[in-house]
Structure formats: structure tokens, C-alpha cells
Image 1 (tube, rainbow, N blue to C red):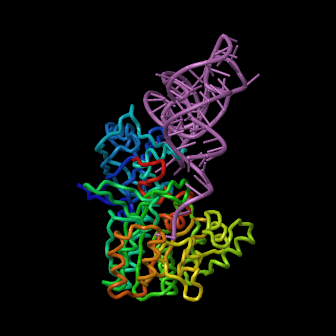
Image 2: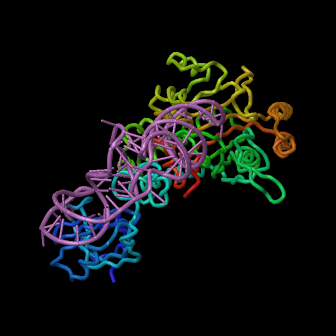
Image 3: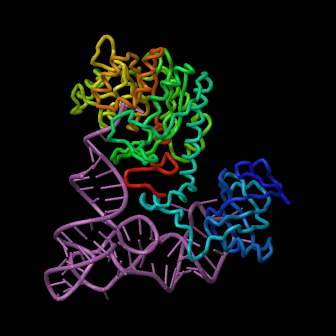
Length: 435
RNA sequence: UCCUCGGUAGCUCAAUGGUAGAGCAUUCGGCUGUUAACCGAAGGGUUGCAGGUUCGAGUCCUGCCCGAGGAGCCA
């Protein structure tokens, strides 16, 4: 029996008899010729069946294959300029593992579909070449981000998903029953990262986070994945550098290893090319506000950047732009103040080009016990839930900084997606929980 | 939560208040190199739900449901 070969590797088996296992992608017919297209997750290959060259039953069996029927195919690999990709499979036999019934065909045809229909069939939509390419790039982005930290002696310390209290405001928390108590799904691993940093110096966590924001925009998910480094004794400049090096590293990896996927997505690599190199442009908040006002934004000093502001600003630069020193009032309670201008926070946001939004948010953490207690009270946060966090300021308080990078927005930017929902296999959004 | 747009065949969409249609998909027929093949034919409808106006409603009105885009919100 011929050995199983991945479609991606068929070109190395020219002239050999091989077996392919996968699914029927499409079937074209031309008189006494059949052109079934098979996919196996590694690629697509065109099969060829000539009626006069095979037993009638084999011809008939291929002819009756329905879209997405799972199959085992045997045939000979041959080079042919007329085949997409230059190689095709001269089919000698096919076995339908499960034939998709004629009266209940595969719903996603190789034609146009609306977003609602596609999202309802997300579990099947993933099989399409475009979604397949995005899955490949998502894998590469995650692998690259982890390699980046692993290669720099960061220790992965996983943060919990059930948490007793909010890292941020309480309005955006998903509450769940926890036996006789309440718990919340984490919004960030950040507070736990600070504990881990005191244990291992340089740490990161990577996992899903949850935000019950009733946001309905192309940049928002209620469940998304964040990679969050935290570095002991680091300052703002240290993590700005870390952030831009991370992003440049990820972009470089995708450009060098996933050019085929970018091509499938019709994403121009030239748009990403500059982002392989650091440094990235930097702006302090004061200047960002001035630029935005000169561009016609309504923003006033002291307010946070709106979605439109972020887009406007990002369009000024070919690379991601780092905005630092926001007013403390628009940032989280644990942000350290700038010693020179205490009304500002030592924080940084990185905005992706082309309006893909904030991809990194972080800063220097408040190390001072008294000030942290004051901030917790000012924000009306439940003190008891933060006692363990305050311990980090009682026992060897240390300056430290870190950030979180939202994986989906990075993928959305790199892939040039209209909406982040395509950057995660099964998006969770305001009005979508299935499939 | 608010604003805007939408819901008609499996899909994408048409249809002055007057017989509900096309393309694709499906099935059948034709074609020995197709490239989202092409050509011909057939089958396929509770027009999101409920009520109202009207001789007559896919179309107008009211309410509801679902979805999309955006806003607010969002380290």
C-alpha cells in the first residue's frame, strides 16, 4: 500500500504512487475528465481522473463525491503546468470515509456569503483557505512571542482565570458562581505577574482574558488572548524597548516564515517590512493631543484617546507608534506617577498602523505602599481582595514594569483584517456566543 | 444602552401597494485539460414573529426577535 503523504510535500514525490487523506474541496467536470480538488490541512491538490484510464466504478465513485466528503485517495504524482501549483494527482482509487449526503450538502459553497452566515458556520468556515491562512499566522505570532521571551530568560508563570476581584473597573467583569461565593473571570494576569516577577525576576503569562464591555466595534472581543511580561527593576524606557523589540520580532517571523499565508490573504508584505526594525516612533501624550487637535479631533487634554483618535494617530506613521505619559486619571490605579510631573503616569500604549488599534498597554507599577492604598480607596476597590497584592509592597517592594499585548489585534493588523473576529478561531462577542 | 442599516429559495440579492424573480448551489443531460469551468433543463418560498391599515401587503403602520456597522464604554 502506498504511504500517506502530506499534500504540501507532494512535489517531492513526483512519479511515485502515494496516498492522500483529507476532504473534497471542489469537483470540476469536463466530459470524460474529472478534476476533484482535495485538501488535507497542509494544502490543496488537483486530482485528475480520465474515464478511459480507470475502471468505470472508480470514475463513477469520484464523480459522485460531494463537497467536503472525507476521503482516502490513491494516485500517482505528476508535474503538469496546467495544474494549480504545478503538480497534480493522477487518481487510481478513492475511498469515501464519510460521504456528505446529496440532500444535505455542505453549506459553505465556493461563492459569496454574508458575515452572519459565515459566523453561524464558523466551525466549518475555518476550513476555507483564507481562514486556514489566518490560523497559520496566529500560530506563528504566538510561537514567535513565546520564543521571544523564552530566549530572553523570562519564566512563564501562568496567572489564574478565576479571580476574586477586579484588576480594573468592576463594570466590565464577567461574574460566575464559585460554589457559595462569587468569582470573576480575569481581565488581566497583571497583578499576579507582579508577584511572579518578585519570584523569578523576568516573567510572562499568556492566556485568555475576559471583558464584559458592551463594545460593538471591529476591534473588540469579550474573550481574547494576552501575553503579558513583567520585569523586576525595569523602568518605562526598558519596557518600551521590550515592547517594540517583541513586535518587530513577531513581524519578522511572520514575514520570513508565512509569506504564503500573507499572499493568500492578499496582504502586501511591504506594509509590514518597516516594522521589522526598531526603534518605533514615540510620542508623549501632550504631543499626541496637539497632533490630534491639528487633525481636527475633538480631544481635550486629560481625556483618553478614542478609537478615531487612535486611527488618526496611527495613520501618521508606517510603524506602530508608542504613546507615553498619559494623565494618571485615564489609567489604571496601579500605574506609577512620573516623578517630574505627578499628574502623568509612567505608561505606554502602542498603536498599530492602519487603524488596528492599541496592541500594547503597559507601564511602571506603583511600588509605594501608602500611595497604592490611597489609590485603591479612591477607586472604591474592595481592599480585602487586594491584601495579597499589598503584601508585594510590604515584603521587598521593588520598582517594576510590564505590559500586555493583545494577540488578536496584532494578528488582525499583520493579516490586514477588517475585523478582529477573524483572528481567533471561535470569537466571543457582544451578540455572539456560538458556535 | 443609544444611533443607523438590514432580515425574501441552501447562499448572495431583485421585486411603483396589484401573478414572488435572477445568479450561484443542488439534481439530470452535454463536453478529453478544467482553473470559483462552461452550455442546456428541472426541482426548490409560512417574504424573521405577532398584530393593524387596505378590495388587495414582501412593500405602509405598531410592537417584538435576530443580525450588521458605528457611538458610548474599553490598563
